[in-house]
Image 1 (cartoon, rainbow, N blue to C red):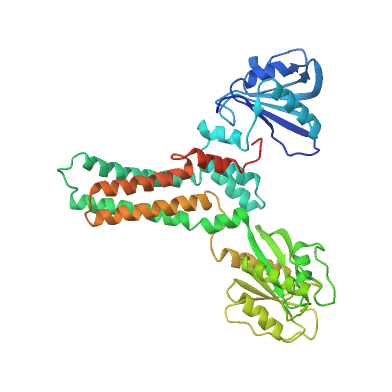
Image 2: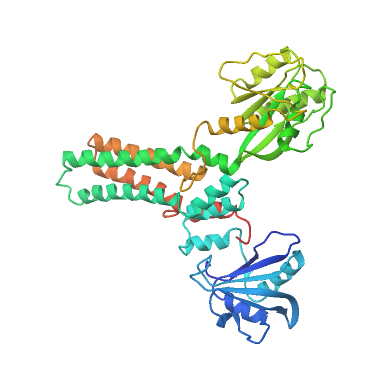
Length: 456
């Protein structure tokens, strides 16, 4: 099944300069022979062309021209999938690419499933599973840091430490199983201490990788920031300033925002979803009450809260209500309207960051962005060259592995039977192997690659 010819449009739907139709698998070159006619003095069939060559010609459907194209020949194993691959660059737009794909499918290829080209690259040993996931991260990158991290993972920054970790566990397991082959010879005390130390070293490596989970989530998914405050404090104005465009309606009438407004932006290279909320206050209005309920839900689901205060007025009971709603969240207090001459001081809890801004003049907005960046990273290192960042799947595998390896360590220390030690070490090593695909199942592969786009 994983060697038959597959095809798909590999470029996004829409109008553009070119669109690419990709064919890969056994028979891909034969299909190209049937539909492609080379133009020019040297007319070469794709099946006879050298690898990594580009040919000008046209795609035909029963001797009728479908489009004038460029056809690239890439023979396996020197291709993205590891198998023979043909890429046809036709004119951009939905119809030319659709017609070229139809002709390809009529001549023996089948429609590729989501992520099937990358799945074949994994199955053919061109990429391991962590590198395959990096391809999806690369496509979905929304910031420079996320792009850098995805490129590093594709180059092996995660695979290398994971493989070294698995090798450590396998070496200890091999030592244990060697003693199981000779049950009359117990492990010497000094050898047992050394094996416990080697297991401890592996657990320390796991802990270092697990510490990157939060950073990886920030880079890949970003964070949610709720903008809260009493009516007319300037929440919508602040959203517009951060976005650098008029997204929310701004009015001097309190309560203009009655529903949550979500908008995505990049703040200091961090993907952020801002949620502008309705003002929290006592009200009997049914629509306002629903807006405040949604505001509270937005606060619960946020990673960080910007509490906007009106610097031209003293704190009120409404501000106290807001503070109660957000007291358990990571928080930045934003004192807005600092351009007004009658600004007054406010009381905040010790340790809470306070940033003074004016949405009217732009004062303090850049300082607020810096404060968001500092609070999000909390002093941790950002994406750097060679640094690995795990995702939720990797985290789950490492947590399961650590549990088994800790049990093996305890069993070895307490002198329990070596078969129990070996069983836990094997399960721990298998869990680590899932990260790079050395131990895997069809269900796992289906889950990972189904999230890819068709054509990749």
